[in-house]
Each structure stands twice: as structure tokens, then as C-alpha cells.
Image (cartoon, rainbow, N blue to C red; front, side, top):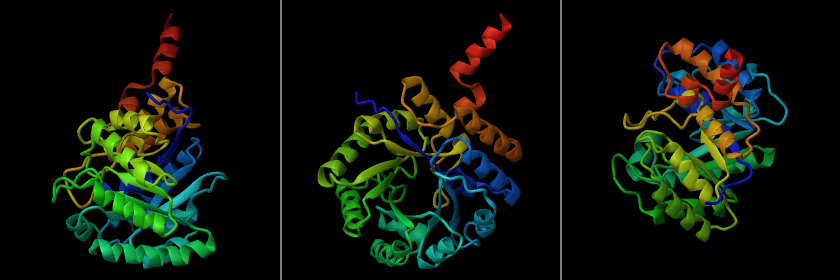
Length: 309
């Protein structure tokens, strides 16, 4: 198995995790959590989204969040957008990068973006035109790459075609998203091998959900295929507003713990992530699905055992 020496962990909890919560998370707490995550060593945080607050009420304070966070040198603060208006708001809020999602399913794209795939690609071109001149990165993602709850199996050719469309716009850092947790280690390896064969100059990252308990197994399969950038969410928070099928993202602390146990460098302090997860768990008043949040790390367990001897 191919084991990388190091990987990059992208924290998406403040956006992808928080957006699913019915109880409005106070702006003060959002800022507190993002600032704590900034101190953990993660190099990139998806801090918010600039979308219609009537659709995603949790993101109604996105401007205030971006204004109030303490920006740490070396950390990239990104935001999800759906169109040029969102990009303009993100630029005004000094986002370092914008995430733009196109779904590999027409049905899902219409339900999620209220656009066809062709319309989304046209909007993405417009976003690139306004972001590139000011040095703000545009990070495209292929959503429902491993299957759609409305259309079923998604052909690999459709995912490849979207990745090729991104590359033709000069966008070579491409995220492949298992939006509703339908991927398996076999399908992850097969799709990534196909993408890297067709687009050898592109850098692919992976966004995984743990809906069926295969999240970390899929991480290992992706590592074996050469992927070294993974998105994760503190506490395993997350889901998808378009469907109730998806549950949380892979937990950031579980991912970091896996890497720590395998000798893979992340630069991330798992205990800081656990503390951030504890704080949001306390606010929400329910246990989050993270294993490491609940049980702690092996190192911490052994340290406590030593203290008791």
C-alpha cells in the first residue's frame, strides 16, 4: 500500500458542518471555533458560505464571521459560493479562496443550485474571471461523484468530463466529493485512477462523508491512489441540505488520529481539534459522531494509565 509521508487536512466544519444545524450557532461561538481551529495547525478552513440566508439560515452571519475571525498567517480562509454574487461577497469579505461546486447529476444540480450543469459551468467561468485578477483562488468540486440519491449510479465519464472542464478553465486543484456517503474503497480507487490517468497534471483532493461507516477506509484507498489532501469536519458534523440521506463528514480528529497512528504527518494538533469539537458539542447538547472526541487518542489513554500507576 502507498503510504504518503504527509497529507494536508482541510477543515470544512464551520461551513459544511454548521450549515445543517437547526439551532442558530451564535456568531461569537462560530468565531471562537474558527479561531481555535486556526491554532490547531490546519492550513485551510472553509469558514462560511455566501449563499441565500433564506435557504441556509445558519450562514446569515457570513459577513460578520469573516470580519471578526483572527486571521493566522499561513492559514487559508475559504468560503463556498454558488454564483458571481456570492463571489463578489466573498471578495468583499477578504476570503482567500472560494469553493464552487458542480454536481455530476443534473437532478442534484437543479435541486442544490437551481441550475443545469451547463449553467453552473458558465457561472464558474464568470467567477474565475472576477477572482483570478485579484489573486483569490477558485477551488472547484465535483459533487455526488460516487452516486446520486435521485439518479443512482453516476458514470465515471461524467465525473471525468467535469474535471476536464475545470482544467480547461485553468483550475487544476479539483475536489472529488462523496456528497452522500456512497463511496467504497474499490470505487474510490477506480475513480481516482481514471481521473489521474486522464488528467495527470491535476491535483485531486477528496471530500468524504461517513454515512455508511466507510469514511476512513476510503481515505486509505485514496492515499493508495496518490491523494494527499482530504477535507474533514470537526466532530464529524455535516450532511447535505438537498437530501436527508447523507450524515456527517469524516471527523477531523479521527482523520488526524489515523495519520498520527500511521506515522503520516499532518501538522495538526488533534487535541486542539478535540477541544473545538467539545465546545460545539456542548452548545448543541448532543454527542457528535467522532470516535476520538468520545474516546480520546491512544497516546492520551496511555498517559492517563501511567499517571495512575
